[in-house]
Length: 211
Image (cartoon, rainbow, N blue to C red; front, side):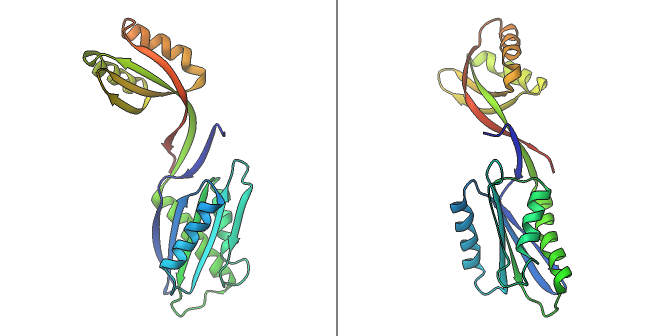
């Protein structure tokens, strides 16, 4: 597993009008080729009457799965420029389709490259990019009277809470960098006078907005 990487914040769409043509960019996270290919097919089915549904995806820790398709546009003017935007932004596990409804004005090879590139770039900017960082989840169990103060202290110190469980006690699952586990344990113990029970509960990615 990668320690950290960049990807799209949320799946979504963004539309642009360029020289009377509609360019609709759809983008998702895709951790395998099957997901990416099914997504591409679903967009093509939705926009079956479009002039083109050009696509690209970049998947894997070493970007080992990548593909670009011009879907009828002149070779190299759509899919590859879209893929290059994903690479330039260093996005991983991302699939994108740009749907074009031709508006009657020919853009030429250079114009097409710019249009498809801008469609992907603007969509990433609109929907946002996140950095996913691998951290250890430490489950902190406390009595109800203690948890509000503990949660407030976590936020003040900059710790991110993955989720909170309420049963007979309160369990806060906290993201902690591997190099800070011992310091966190000492801090939490001192803060609660030893009343908190802590258990390392595996690894999980946390997300931070980049754009």
